[in-house]
Length: 310
Image: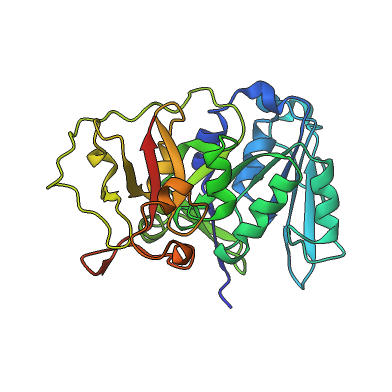
């Protein structure tokens, strides 16, 4: 098994966390529940800037060595020393279980927390992770692969205006070697990982999402329609027509730019399709749920979000 784990850079964590109304963190228990080692950059950011966010405490859990999980906790007890000392100001304990975010020990910590901030471990567990923190009605800031934006646990609350994109894209990731205890930032990691992640949240942001500036006009000859839906395909966000009032399929990255006053989200080809989308299905309407792909002239289309201008 590989000993390397990808994680946020300190810079990425710092830029995103400073983009929120800081009063939301005041006297709150902040929980980082899926870290891979005790020197997590998310945890370090809160420890180093404890006076900036002024939480009640910051707790971190994750999977440690020998199948046992770890818990680290900091309550701002460093005082004027500026740089807390591990084991003296940061309390580290070994968990009885493996430190998974859904283990009984970690679920108990989750219930007592106010804000969850995390970098979910894998695509396979991401849906369970999002379902869990939303079912507990937690405030959260979560990094997410763009590939995971196209799931019910994201699309449904996006449609309802319960969650939205964070403030920044994640453009750099570090690789941590758990055997050597070293971190490094490489161009390869940046190329493969950085541009494919963003943030989602239900916390208030200092700067609200700005409406997309649309410059293209609709032309029937310019926009192709799907083989299985009478809906136009828009291959790039810059191609969204400013004067079209029908339903469009746009790239999944639209969710990072979505402004509720500008567009209505009607679902995707895989999840949460609105009745208006079903009505435009070219085949037997009862087969629409099973038909989760999109194609144009027989060629498979990339994942799309269905939207309509308000």
